[in-house]
Length: 327
Image (cartoon, rainbow, N blue to C red; front, side, top):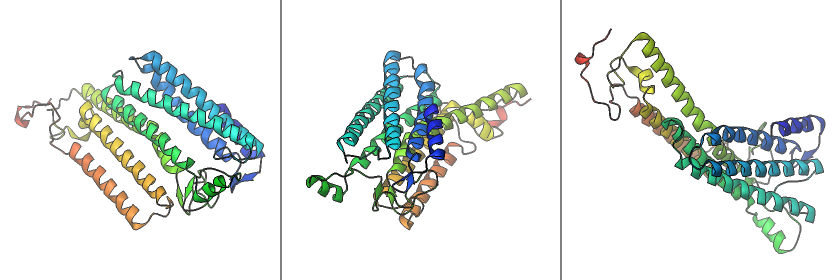
């Protein structure tokens, strides 16, 4: 995928063809780069699975093969100067689309199997394990949302019923594909775009585990500093223990990971709802902004409860401050 990303970048620079309002090599670049990031994450994760490692290996292999098949078909269709998705305009294009559909089904199924294996495994530390589980489950959900783009529009149904060659499916909701789009992503700026929830869901596998890893790193640094200074805490997040000491507790880290997963799930639901209503990401209405504000407030409140000063950690006895001896 890294090599393919470089190749599509060269195509983007050397080939000035436009398809449906966008540079013809932009879509292959998006897929190659996105799959490169996704594959790198799985390449790090799957070898760490101790339960059912052979199943994890097969799932990873099928993900690699099906991802490569999809990305190659998209690139070949770009080179041919035509659509890769929804394309039933000729028998050749239909064959390419059917092949890619098979690759996508294999990719989704393999990711589902990988998600089940990860859910059953306990190899990683608790906060990171929870983060990876949430990320992979949301990634499978995000992939599933991509199937919404394969639903034909009313006009396309009429063409199919009449036996006419047509595209079957669309990215946009409420407007035709190919209109004004955002820089780099080309997501619609005038209507709903189903590529947004697809993207947000898939890359939960990077966002949530990165948040879990950052929390674990902060906790390790705090623990190391406390050991170097010879300090002690009294099992509370207050009375001198503070925010840093709270992060040193794996239970607090796990709760913050859960909040991160809930926040990302809420965001995924919000952008899906927004896209299905035919609303552009960059032009939200008052209802969408209100829902976003409620989500932000809920996440902030949950975080404040977990990190509130003086709150005892789960399972840790409350020790009177007078009984704590400080150096």
